[in-house]
Structures are given as structure tokens and as C-alpha cells.
Amino acid sequence: MSAPVPLQVGITRSAGHSTSGKRVLLAEPRGYCAGVDRAVETVEKALDKYGAPLYVRKEIVHNRHVVETLAERGVVFVDETDEVPEGAVLVFSAHGVSPAVHEAAEARSLRTIDATCPLVTKVHQEAKRFARDDYDILLIGHEGHEEVEGTAGEAPEHVQLVDGPAAVDSVTVRDPEKVIWLSQTTLSVDETMETVQRLREKFPQLQDPPSDDICYATQNRQVAVKAMAPECDLVIVVGSRNSSNSVRLVEVALGAGAKAGYLVDYAREVDPAWLEGVETIGITSGASVPEILVQGVIELLAEHGYHDVQPVTTANETLVFALPRELRGPRQG
Image 1 (tube, rainbow, N blue to C red):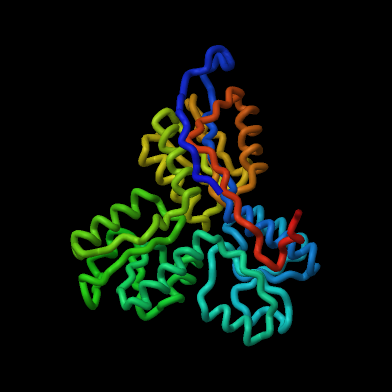
Image 2 (cartoon, rainbow, N blue to C red):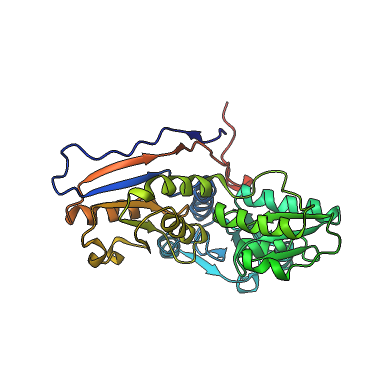
């Protein structure tokens, strides 16, 4: 595993590809992160090994196309373990689950495969560690998000959810000298640090997590969008509305200077009215979005005269996570 490598970013006007001045800036990195790639492959390999129906708790990742495609292959998505027949195979989604969910699955004799992103697992371990040391844990995240529910469930008596800067005023702790913050991995870096700053004003002894909780892929996608947004009349983010990191990308684009920004699942959702008077369009995609959906948007824009596609590269991603042990092949060599 290696860290993302920062690259030089150069955005230049095209010299002759497009007489109309129309161009597309294509953010790199975009799309699948290592955790999503692992989760989707986990379900595909489990289907090959165990056959359909295969049960998955919640959406394996927050992307409509991925979920619908897997459902067509025999995956059954459920909200809770009691919807799964006793003894069946159940995959936990990339967002992680609480100990209570593991216990409920065990009580039904379910054969479980855990596709939780290893970076989310890291936050779970941090929550357990600081709960053991009797800290108040301030978890920055969005109420109702599966990842937040899973992390909070590791130490419910120690964790308080802080849903953005406005929620800081209502936070209370037992000992201001034993407070630490953790965060949902898919948040906006800027919004998270604004919340941390507000918390630190209230609790000067607030401790930082031992390592950055916001995932590398979330940060990289936001950095790429920030690099191109000031040049863009319009930014199109490909992603689903229940994908926290995709929604954040639209907000980051607008905050960094894009004149307009929209979130779409598919190319067909792009409104031609958005393109009126627009020269430069930025395109990116959330961390749970397959590249075929981005290519669909590029093809649609080409039909409207946007033939000049220029990459904006801010990092190379080389991180790969091993599959859950139940699905790994025999060791080589």
C-alpha cells in the first residue's frame, strides 16, 4: 500500500480542439475508492461462491446503479438481520455495523461476511479504545447515516453525535479534559474542521484522533474538485443522493468557485438547460460510482459540442484492500 502522490495541476485553454471554446475538465481521482472496490467485489465473489439469493444488510455502497445491478443478479438487500432466513449468508455493507448487529446475526446462525471498509474499521477501533479510557467521544457526522450508527454502536454510552457546526452549542461532556473527536469518513474536510474549531473553542483540551479519520479518497476527490472549480461554469458530480461524499462534492465545487453544480445518477438526468451559455464543465464522481456512468455523461456532453476533455490530476491512488478472508483464494508461491 502506498500513499497518494501529489501531482502538478495545470489547467490550460485548449489550442484548437474546440472552436466554440466548449471543454470538459475531468477530475482525477474520481469514482471507486479502495473500500468500495473491495465491497463490490466481495458481493460478486460471494455470489460466485454461495449462489443466489445472497443477502446484504443495507446498500453495499451508496450507489443506485450498483445496487440495482447486483439485485438483478440475485442479491437481496435488507434493512435488518431478522429479514434474513436462519443459516443464510449475509454480507455487511462497506459502511460498517455495530456490535449489536453482529450479535443479532449470530443469534440467527447467519454466515456473515464483513465488507466494512478498513478505514471505517479503524474509526471503530478508535471509538472502542477511547471508550475503554473513559473519554467522551464527539463523533462528527450526519444523523442516520449507517456509518455513524455503526461507529456510535461501538460505545453508545461514550459517543455523542455532532451533526455540523450548529450542533456544537448543545454538546455537554463530563470532563472537559477527557474529550476527543472522531468523524464519519466521508465528510467535507472543510466542514469537519469548522466543527472541530467550534468544539475546540468550547473545549480547549479537545484531543485529535490519532490519525486522520476522513478517508484519503474523500479528501483526494475534494482536492481535485477544488482545483478545477474556479475554471468551471458548471460542475456535474455523478453520484447518488444518499451518498454523503457525492453530495459533499457538489458543495465543495460551489464553495471553491464553480458557478453551478448538480448531482446526477445517470447522464439522462443532465438537463440541457444547464448547458446554455456554458463553456467549461467540470466532471467528477463520488467514491461509490462506477466509471461507466461518468463515461455516459462525457458522451452526452460530446453530443452538445463538448469534445475537448482535459484531465485535472491532483493525486495518484494505488491503495488496494484485501478481500475478507472467507473469499480469498489460495496463497500463491
